[in-house]
Image 1: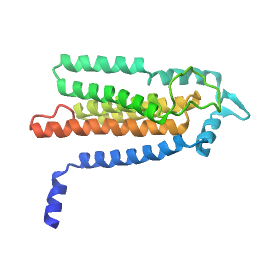
Image 2: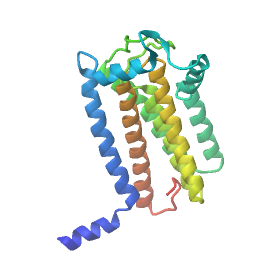
Image 3: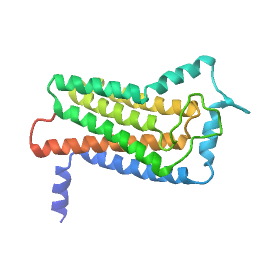
Image 4: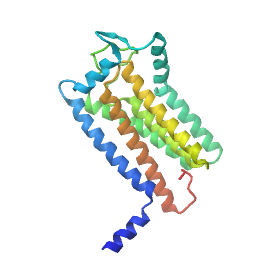
Amino acid sequence: MKTTANALLTRIEFPVLLAGLLIAGCLWGFEELMEVARATTPHAFDTEILLAFRQAGQPGIPIGPLWLEGVMRDVTSLGSATVLVLITAATIVYLLLIRRPAPALLIFVAVAGGQLLSSLLKVGVDRPRPELVSHLVSETSLSFPSGHAMLSAVTYLTLGSLAAGFLQDRTVKAYVLVLAVLTTLLVGISRIYLGVHWPSDVLAGWCAGFAWAMLCWLAARLLQRRKGGESEIGD
């Protein structure tokens, strides 16, 4: 039995095992945050963090200099449907032009599936936008999970992992992955700063987006290995 277990572990690649563990952790985190979202009253950490981004006693005025609000509006646009669709379409067309259909398909499935999943989760939880502070941008959809946070995670992490797989230098690989993660984090923080999401919405969006991106990458990797062909999705 011990020999069989050791043989199985040696066949499982470390990145695959790590991806499985991260997916499980993200799903657990999302489930916990969903309980927070379904509560009849906002959780203390939601209200405290949201108010921390506003001047004391003035929920309509964000903290920081006047230019910071404009910066946050620009940053949040990096997670908008328009920007993400443009980036995704441009990347897919480029990959098709250089005859890399496998990563092109992976990106399409990840982003399109993430958008569908985000919409279904919003309807399923049915959480309204926070009214504790004023909204600095106009939003009409439901609040949980944050679509900007989730789709930023899906898009930028998928693109970052694919780009890193095509690169040789480890320092450049790390830079690309860090840039993808940093962009995802900044988009989520901007949603809280602008007052259109509870912090738990953003955390849930990150969890769901990261889990979905990792699941798509894992599925594509395993399918590629089963075909026995040269990997096109990056290692």
